[in-house]
Image (cartoon, rainbow, N blue to C red; front, side):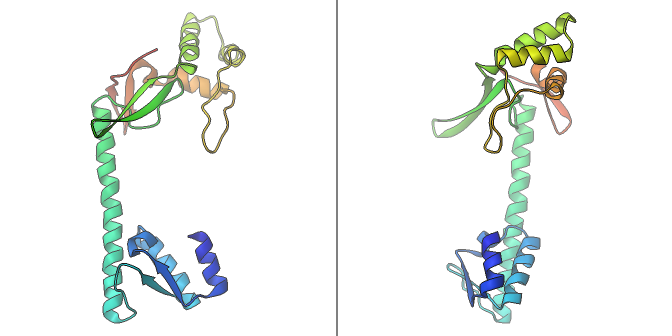
Length: 197
């Protein structure tokens, strides 16, 4: 989309062809910004599946469809939020599980089921960290150094490779009620129904 908008400014095409209006923008703010760029370039939107013209009635139809796309996006956001809250109230984890746990999903009898399970590599290391910290014989710095020696790292993500766990991260883990089975979501703690280490 950003590349297209950049090209529109320099190449000034007569038409911009979209599959459907709701694929162009999901909110009215973005829709207005995109249309302003297209208008300045002298370009007109053509939808492959909707009969929208540059007449007053065509513009009205476009605006109604753009408002419906905004409504759909807003409503979907509310429905997703309701589902996440319900999952938390049932003791589930409606977010990415913290270090030491893994999110899992699979299709069962046509239904997507998700759950959290202990990470077989990082889980035992964090369990050891909790046990050692509870003795009162370790400082945070000593514990993080020992965990580095044992090979504890963060999970890699598309944006970041694995890396050593920092002292700040470890202290956050040691204070996180999730490791006691309490899932807090939108400031409402619930007791998680999950496998502990």
